[in-house]
Amino acid sequence: MAKVENRTLREIMTKDVATVTLKDNVFEAAVKMRDWNVGVIPVVDEQNDVIGVITDRDIVIRGIAEKREGSAAIGDVMSRDIILGRPDMTVDEAAKIMAQHQIRRLPVVENGKLVGIVAIGDMAVRQAHHDEASEALYEISEQAPRH
Image (cartoon, rainbow, N blue to C red; front, side, top):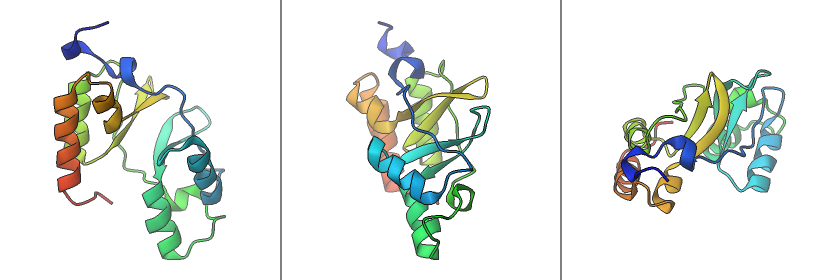
């Protein structure tokens, strides 16, 4: 095991990640969130490049609150302005980026392809960088949501 200071996202990220494409609809994304017990799903293209994410909040704010049907296209509600991590990024670097951008989950890409996802909770649960993850979570929670 690497020293705590040198732990990378590759070591802590979730590698089995549910995804959707622009061919899916909001209802299908919501069912996938329920089945996978997640609040965010990366949106990928045919080459598995991340082009956005759809969150449970996106579905509520851009979907239901705007009276869109469950058959609405993913592209109508997804977040396109996303921040991505790299597998070789340290946990500390990721925590700082997540705090700076007020995000709780970070899709991880390698050569443009989705290889995993890291949540702020993953950092705290694994105790690798508990202080940094706790500080990032505090900063994210204290500031207004980005959407």
